[in-house]
Image (cartoon, rainbow over all chains, first blue to last red; front, side, top):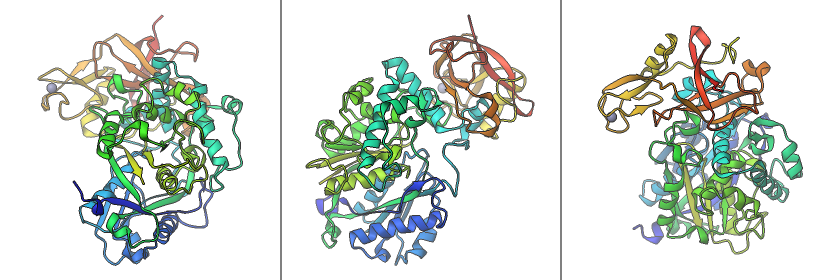
Length: 390
Length: 140
Ligand SMILES: [Zn+2]
């Protein structure tokens, strides 16, 4: 067991401005990544040169070789990338950083994700997502919305989940974005009627079931509780952070869809969730607020089940009953607006918002929030999640 | 006219998958199985997931096939499908070959006719580069 002074904590958060894809054209994607990391270091009161590690995921293009020079790093001690796409590695990268500082490999690790879809490629368009793309592209299965629609349809078939229940996730995120001036969809209210009237993208997923495509970057600084004593912010503890994938899942929704039948319509996180709670020593009932990866509304429904906030197949009714609403729901989610309405920073903005909640700084602050669960992209390998606490 | 244009991308299959496509060129739908324990596997792998044998064999797809899930794409995520919207993508399962699911299309299915659990049969359709693609049609 790691001594408490050596346990990982988050001491800084930073972001660039967020914009619609292509909305940031005057600065490079790399410049945004630097900005987010510098903001996180400044927030922590840490000189950027003292950062000695970097962790990211989903083939982030902002590599440590350039970052260490641009940020004037004194000595680089750690650089890691979580395998896989689909945003699955957001909390996995956080787990790498936590492991690095707890094992003494590094002292202050910047975990980040920076992407300008206007400068690279749009996630909503065709891209060879996995080595199995030969088995999907000739059949017109191109984009994550189409891939995820297959899981959503299966969930509806098995459990009677409805489009109106999916819509509730979109409405919750948009309502939270209404209070967050940084959100791309700030000031753009959404009603159930708007959702149901929005154009079909990949049946059963409509336009407002799909996340944004965005430009922006987000970062956090991870160090040990001992070192955090010398810094200016209130540390947020990484009680548990890990990656996971269930037996036989493989490339999952990004590949040939040969996941085991009995867990096909899930986020591939059930086993990992049990391990995560065990490591943190808490139960789902104790979680005050959650930031659940929302590439699509249905991914949140899956996560509610996987992480034990409701039973298997009950995610739709659980959402529709108002449990996700701020401030009075049992489990307010995606309190900055999430990937659906704040910005699609591949879910790293969800990690940042999780820290904000535990500092008491969210624009949709949950009263006395002590424990926040954050999930990475689901239904891929690896997925990941973290439990943060104060 | 094929269900989808033959100009759709066909990323080069990896070496382990090449034989699947070689069979398709001959209009044979074959899946990989283990020469020792018989476990079927798709997409192909060089090692059996059940017993780790490297003795790989190919078995014919069972005739009985069923829609496991499906979607209708209403948005063109690739320029080649702009005039084919909406089109469906289906996950096809073979009850006699558990563990194998195939991404494909049901070529004659109106949106109201397609359902999870619908019985389908193999219908070869022209694909890119002279390839034949294993597509399906509804059994009525
Ligand atoms: Zn075997």
